[in-house]
Every structure is written in structure tokens, then in C-alpha cells.
Amino acid sequence: MKYFLIILSLLIFLFSCKEKPPVDEDKFMLVYIDLISFPDSLHNHSEMLEEYKNNVFKQHGIKREDYQKMIEYYNSKPELWEQFFQKAIKYVESKPDSSFLN
Image (tube, rainbow, N blue to C red; front, side):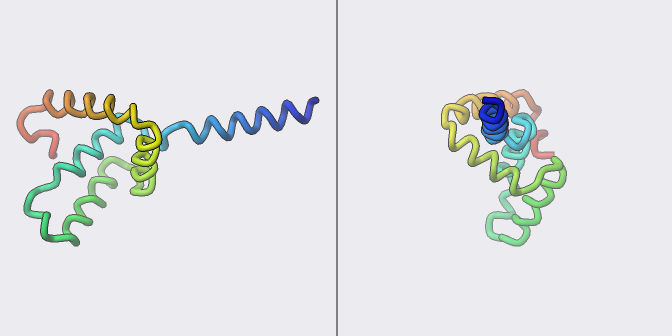
């Protein structure tokens, strides 16, 4: 019985770790906003766009892989996207014109 409880506790711990998002939601939101609001001049310059994305990840202190894990996390829980977008819209609307791009 003792081993069963240890194994059960370990499984619960491991399972609960997978349920947590890899990046803080607020940080994810800021990165997401920065990534979707890249300058128009980068549309046709894939190398410069990649450099811009790398700078965004560096500025916010997250790895591209962790950002991708957040996308996957939200895709696995679609109800979170609606809340996320409402929060992101409020954030952008609260900023003076284009200040969120800096």
C-alpha cells in the first residue's frame, strides 16, 4: 500500500506539472502582441522578420520553444484563447497609440 501511494503521488505530481503553462500568461501576452504587431516593412523580408522575432523573445526573456509550448497549451484548452484575447485587447486599448510596439 505504501508503494502504491508513493507511485500515485509521483504520477499526480508529474501530471500536474504538465498542466501548468511554461510561461507566465502576462509575459506570453506581451510577446504575442509584439510578435503580431511587427512593422509592415518586414513583411517581405523573412530574415529581418526572424531577427525581429528573436529580439522579441530576448527582450521578454523567453525561449522560442517556450512560446511555442504556450501556443500548444492554449490550443489544448481553447476556452483560454477567448479570455486571453479579451485581456490582450484591453491591454492594447489602454496604451497610447503604438506605445505597445516599443
